Structure formats: C-alpha cells, structure tokens
Length: 276
Ligand SMILES: C[S@@+](CC[C@H](N)C(=O)[O-])C[C@H]1O[C@@H](n2cnc3c(N)ncnc32)[C@H](O)[C@@H]1O
Image (cartoon, rainbow, N blue to C red; front, side):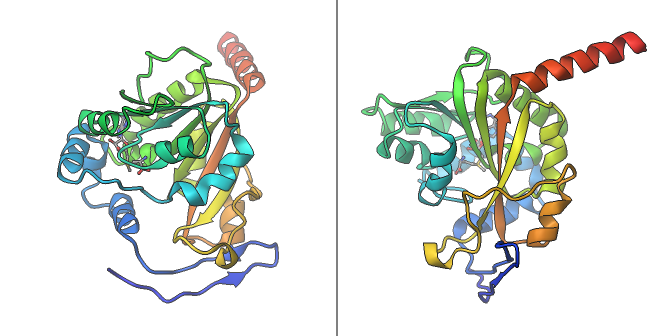
C-alpha cells in the first residue's frame, strides 16, 4: 500500500484544489488501468473472465454506492427503469435495490461474473443480471431506460484495441436505449479534455459535470460538493482552471438525452449532405 500526505485547499469559487490521500485497492486498479502499460487487457472479455474466476469479489471500482447516492437522488427516481453497464461484481446494483430502487438491470460481457451474480441474487426479483456486450444491446428496445450507470466500463473499452470505434458503438447504443430526458451517468477517471470530445461526438445530450474526491472521506472533510455541477466550457478547459489538472477526483458526466438536439443534428446532417 502506498500512502500520500493529506492536503486540501478551498478555491475561492467554493470548489477546491487537489487532495492526496491513502491508496486503496480500487485506486491501485485504477492506476493500472489508466497507465500506458498493459492497457489492452482491460478491453478483452477473456481478461475479465480470468480476473473474476480468480477473484470473485465483491469489488467496487472508483467509488461505492454510499458516496454516489446523493447524486443519484438528484437525477434518478425510485420507480425508474435502471441499467448498470459493465456491472462486474460491484455491490452497486444490490445497494440501489436495498435503497428502494425498484427495477435494476445489470449487464456485463463476462459470463463468469454474470453467472456468479445471478446465483448470488436469485432471491431478488428487482435485480437482474444479463450477459451482454454494451456495444450491442439489441435485446433492449429503443427508449426503454430512464437511467444508465457506467462506473469504469467506458474506461475499460478505452483501454482496448479499436478504442474509438468501440466506445462510439457503446455510446450509440446507450443513446438509443435511453428515453428522452433519460440520463447516462458516466463515472470515470477521465478528465474533460479526454472525455468531452468523445461524449459530444454524437450530440445526443446536454452534459452536467460533477466531481468527487477519489478517496472516500467523511462528509465534513469532503473537498467537493458532489451534487453541484461545475461550470463546463465547450472544450472542457474550464474544469482544469477551477480544480487544477491531475486533481485527485473522479469525474461524473451526467449526459441528459435530448431528442430536440438529435432532430437538429439530423437536419444539419441532411443539409450538409445536400450542399456537397
Ligand atoms: C473497470 S470494471 C468496472 C466494474 C464495475 N462497474 C465497478 O464499478 O466495480 C469494467 C467492467 O466492464 C466489463 N466490460 C468490459 N467490456 C465490456 C463490454 N464490451 N460489454 C459489457 N461489459 C464490459 C468488464 O467485464 C468489467 O466488469
């Protein structure tokens, strides 16, 4: 285990600069995933099958339900039809249900983890586990989910071969199966300069950006107000200006599907086509 000294400083806008704190197993995994070595493995189903065979968990990447719950309260209702993509053996789905959410579907590409989670939660009808590739969710109808939660799954596709192609396919599918005004909640280590252009490539949504300390803290010690979105400029540079680059945070992009934007993008594409 590595350890870092604690250091926090509150920014005049009410936000604050980076925090360094003790490393957890989750942070070690994240560091490994975001480093340039061995990145391909995270995009491969065989890697995940092997990992889940060796380590059945439970294990949560980045953040646990408890710290994210206040943000979910803002965007999701208990009656909403929810999808967790790339669920792994995280406790997120189980804790959503324990907290009163009535309908939580989880998917993952690893048959090993899906079978284990099906068995573990066979007594909970509100919690379903299905083996599915997030790049092809054709088993789900269009406009069928109110919210989709992604904790580390887009990140793992970004580590694989053909990352751009695969993440676009994933985001296209996410956009298709969300209802109008539905939310895609992406929890990631990727700062706006690395994620925003990708999310905007499809023009499905308006985007709110939230941040949360990487390390779990008591409420009174937290540097960031999770439920308060940060100002987000078109290129995302506004965030670095506020929180600094390499801040010890996770970024949470809440992408709200907007049919009006989609119709406008289609009109623009058609007029572009007719001009050329
Ligand atoms: C970094 S882990 C995150 C697991 C879990 N969401 C959490 O927060 O602990 C990424 C997960 O995405 C899954 N995954 C990778 N590629 C996938 C794909 N194409 N379709 C569905 N799931 C995928 C992996 O099997 C793994 O469980």
